[in-house]
Image 1 (cartoon, rainbow, N blue to C red):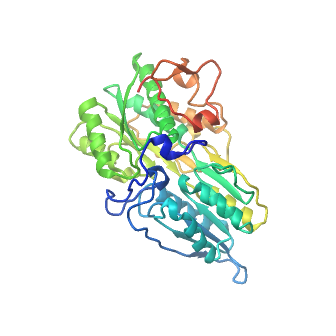
Image 2 (tube, rainbow, N blue to C red):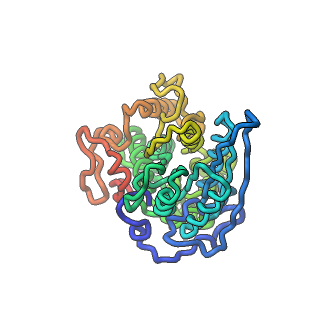
Image 3 (tube, rainbow, N blue to C red):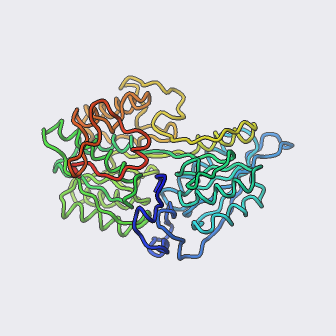
Length: 427
């Protein structure tokens, strides 16, 4: 998980040594091996690629090494990080050489770091929560190098990270709320579904944000609360499991809008199949623009561009201006104009910053497209937050046991979001 203080294995309650590679379809692999609680049973494959952007032949290039937990050929996590790597290289404007090792299990991240240092890397970026402790250890071992850990926290699990290490994350909960608004605006059954990887805080807060948004729109339309069902598949890349879960949600629970946290387009493809059978079922993009996999069924979605974050670190190393930071990129971060714009000028649905909405399907009623755009713009200035009474039609946010979690003028702070382990009452 991405929360401090307890291990991912302990949170999930999974046994040591769970395999991660055996069920993955051709061309796809897990995006965050750390979540599986053990090393892959499949022999790791490593691959290096060097991309050089030259401006002055005599200048020494910045050398950046990446460690990926999955293959760059997946359509989710590792693919997204590699897309960010290429974006940062292209926009750096100075000589840079970047290279990566892919499909690296947790237990082998140390040797991967050594390999990248052997290649002359000045900056090393590790892209799985499970890499955090060893990233901190190697940052201490190599004080003349710089390290960035993705999805953890700057201090390291043992609080031992030195000043040459930073942390970063691109966060989706705001976008999931907006997806929920779209879902609540189009659902005809009043029942939405979620295909979820693991019950960890990151996924839980995304489920909650999606359901809160869906309830906001549906209740405003009909006066009734939304109903939501979650199918846990306990895997990050499992297209067959995701497909079965999606079908079960549709056939057994009568869900007609499906969100998901699984790194393939499988859920969207299932929704498209139902659309082709003249049954309206809708879904979204996740991490990448997946419209081609479900052109009829695609409503919108959450997309990440890690490039601007990586470019920040490139610049700090190149200019010797390094500061150890903990970045949590949300809507409005790394955009040229952070102030909210009028609805008619909203950039919702356009690529910008580190996280943004996929294009909005015009099947969403105009008034709800306007609402989505208004909320998107307000989030840029932090004028609106999903985990607030305002985000729940003025009502306190309660969990499944009826306990009030957020009331009055409260908003979920970083700690609540980072460690969220409860589901909202509508699930």
